[in-house]
Amino acid sequence: MAKIPGEEMEKKILEAAQELFLEKGYMATSTVDIAKKVGCNQALVHYYFRTKQNLFKQIYLQYVNSLMQLGRQNIQQCASVTELVQEIIHLYFTFFTKYPKVPYFFVNELIVSSEHRQMVKECFIDNQMRIMLFNQLTQLIRNDIQAGKIREINPYALLQNMVSLVLSSFLALPLYNDFISTDEADKQAYLARREQECIDIILRSLTP
Amino acid sequence: MAKIPGEEMEKKILEAAQELFLEKGYMATSTVDIAKKVGCNQALVHYYFRTKQNLFKQIYLQYVNSLMQLGRQNIQQCASVTELVQEIIHLYFTFFTKYPKVPYFFVNELIVSSEHRQMVKECFIDNQMRIMLFNQLTQLIRNDIQAGKIREINPYALLQNMVSLVLSSFLALPLYNDFISTDEADKQAYLARREQECIDIILRSLTP
DNA sequence: CTTTGAATTAATAGGTCTATTAAATAATAC
DNA sequence: GTATTATTTAATAGACCTATTAATTCAAAG
Image (tube, rainbow over the protein chains, first blue to last red):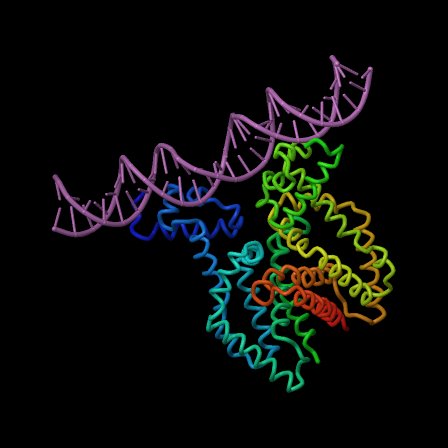
């Protein structure tokens, strides 16, 4: 070791940790596992990140941000709730189809650990991006309600419904694997069907 | 100890384990924790159940069954999909409102552990109850489609949509707690709202 | 070529955990 | 009461885990 210059090793550790955290969650991943995956000494993990919690924090907050950034341009261009719903659901399906383990990782850590919730809360609370996107949603809803294009609905409820349907489509993947089919093409077809189904349900739920 | 006759202790261990598994999940609960909660020696947990996995299995399968049994009479009396949807969602909201940690426990173990999925699969595969209820749903859907009362829909998709919306209402409770309100009355109101919202969404998704 | 600071390792302290064992205690039978 | 069986305990083996320490190797600078 020590042949790789500078921050190379730090990055490798971060990447290995990312994969393992995604695969098995925080609790079930040990710094020994991470080191083994990188092929370095276990102390090195602590040398760069001091604690396992630190390492996790960096990775998790990176996901929080990338999920929030996801296609903000596309979203800002939307002129109606209908467009927005289609755009958001499509973006998330595209992203999660690429990284199908992110939803569970994300949800699990958020449910399981009060500390991790606090972490996310602090990251969200004064986040300009979040505030802007939420304000846009609220504004669009108000407009479309007044125009009689959609029924009255609380923006939080709409968000929760979308998130629920999208995430659960991916959370169910392990079940799909074990109960229905392990074939990759089948899985892709399932996800494509779910995307349409999610959009359809949400749009129907908005008709006046 | 040893003053309590017969199976009393076994039951106490089972109950303590149940609470802890619900609270923290399989991985984060140790047999030491369980013994501490009961107030007995840790070896006793193994004396009665031999392994932690055994103990878990008993508890988990009990939940699988009680969830499946849940109000099967009420459900069998339903004459239309609309009725069925309302009845099912209401029953699950009632049950989970009483035991709000069951949804996460249930979902998590199912997602996280391939072994636990196999366990459930074996329990489901030839289960008469499951087959009957599913057949009834399929039949009702067929009837209502032909009668022009609902649009064409796959029974699996309908089930997944219902389950997703119901479960996620409860999975979000820790977030509700930390981000919105810790007040018990608020939480009850939130759940009541969600129940209506879930029913509403599903029924709207079925209109021809 | 040697010095110096950074990167890496080996070793280990101090915990935890599951599961087993043998010994002690209680309950029951004879 | 004593023998027998069931319950309960203390003790511990054998893993594994995080985090730290001190020693080693490496890379660059003088």
